[in-house]
Length: 122
Image 1: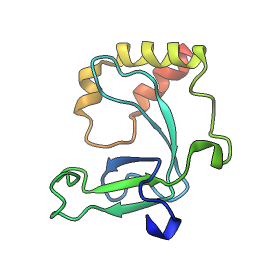
Image 2 (image 1 turned 90 degrees about the vertical axis):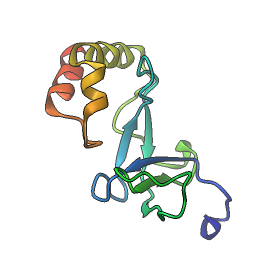
Image 3 (image 1 turned 45 degrees about the vertical axis):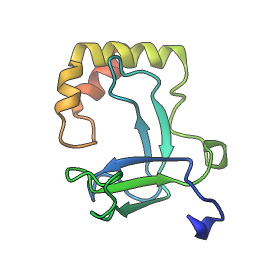
Image 4 (image 1 turned 60 degrees about the horizontal axis):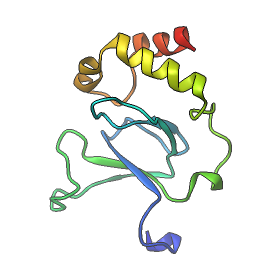
């Protein structure tokens, strides 16, 4: 991060090597009891986490996609994830698709069925 003149990135997400590419927009959300508050994250770069970094290394997701700056530093994301209309559609889609199914996904890429449900409720 020193190359950017900062000590910590704004955001990051664990991933597999080919899940994300530079300049991707990622709609990320926590997988808690109720996945809510989806947020866009811009991928500045993807880095492999060393196995020696016991706090950050995850065998199933050995890389991190990193957003260096605050979101206002980037172009406008694909759509406004903060709108009430989208949040309601997102929550309904997750509920219909099944939170347990979301948690079982091996890929960070959402399945077509989940995307279709979000679109249907939006």
